[in-house]
Image (cartoon, rainbow, N blue to C red; front, top):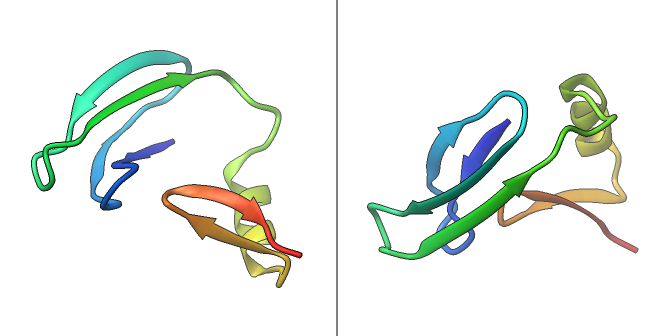
Length: 66
């Protein structure tokens, strides 16, 4: 899973599995806190959702648009 800054979108790291992380962005100096839990969705499913017109990426997260 890619970890991106919630403010500017800069890639901060990649994490596999679970983690509790607090990362300061080197670009905008925003302190980002993450609590990553294992999910049932895999990266293949995410790519399919991104191709659908009803989903888009907002600040690093997948959001449903209606």
